[in-house]
Image 1 (cartoon, rainbow over the protein chains, first blue to last red):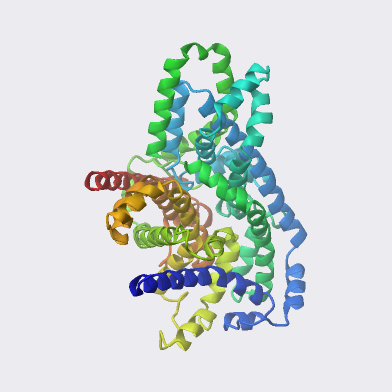
Image 2: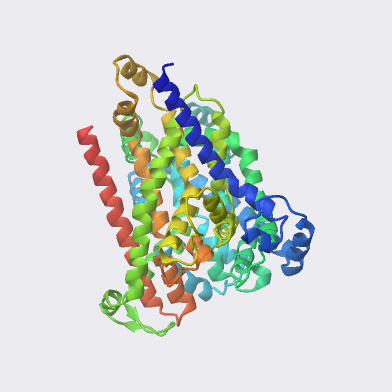
Length: 271
Length: 313
């Protein structure tokens, strides 16, 4: 390695280290902040403090924590399971049973992908009100179940599903739904893992739509309640950061559990 | 995406030639059964609201008390300074943030794709980590870190980058910068993963051949990597375009659109029009179609630029 290459290599390591530091620092800040008084957080104290238990006590005294995390978990889990089921069925269907008409529908769906949620928000809200579903979990979950993005993702991934497997299963007399359930599903687990991360995070972090349809404190999700705490005139950051640590744990956990399959699934999908 | 569509059309063609008899009645019924649940839900929760919102955008009045107003809402748009400000802000966020993020993501992906690099997994996980945070966590964190006496100002002053604290949340200019920093922090790693995945599919021997021919590394990046990644870059830019033009969560949580509407976005304005002020559903539907229009124009331009590059490369 000559001097120039060595210097360049050094520069690569330096910029990657800076990027990694910038990416990870807020996580450190979150944990440290949860152990400090609010006054210390806003004045930039970056060392572990001794206020953690007071913050935890304050958080549980201010919000009905079990309730709001239950709401979040229920919406995220039920929403994700339904989205994965409906969207993977459709992705499989579009790829495995091609017809000219369905291809047209699929192309039309891709066009719809570019229509932002803001354009649907108002009529959706009026619809949900007319169905008397405001302030229910169903109102939050229903509009997101058929996700064009996830259908597209599953269709792309299905292209890699070996046809021989399907033909063999047919020869063995399996019905189409059995092929999907017993052959396709286990073979495509890394695709499902990657989609699970994407869908679960989207559901768990969903903000705008739940903000519109949920209106009583006992039905609101953790995201909504903690967000309301931060908009106070003088937010109690130490206490709020306890909440944000708790709100981040589930997505962090899902990511580390499924990380390997996530990378594999993503590789498969782009191929 | 374009690649994928060509690919599916080709295989569909050969498949039809190879086994035309397979397109039997049973096959057709099964095909519809698999896609039916999704199509029904899309029809109810997407297609129907889209047409409804188109119809609404020509209605005037308060609440559900609407009447046909023709072009009234469009005329109102041109005379509404708050709308113009929200449109300009949204465009500023798009034109500044998306190029920075895409460039950073691409550079990190190329650096991390080098198999001789040490700690690759560590760097990759670290840079991807921000997009695992919950929205609310990251908004709270940015709000507290960028407080007037907060850690960021203290660090910048200690390093003598700035003389006095920067009013991140109080100044219209710095508030925009803060939002751009926050979104870039959150989404760069997400885009990077798409590029990393695509880079793994590029045939190594192309790079080897170029290296042997003495092609310098910047030229390999410009004339091999960029053209090869073009479909993925196009895909991620369009996804980011849609995301940025719908920007709501961050601005509502970090700056609430302020100070004095400096970070007000179109989505936030629609939300305010519908749920904060006297509800005017018709007018807010019109504003939402402006987003659709801008997304359509920008996506079309991105397609054109991508096609143009193909011609020159």
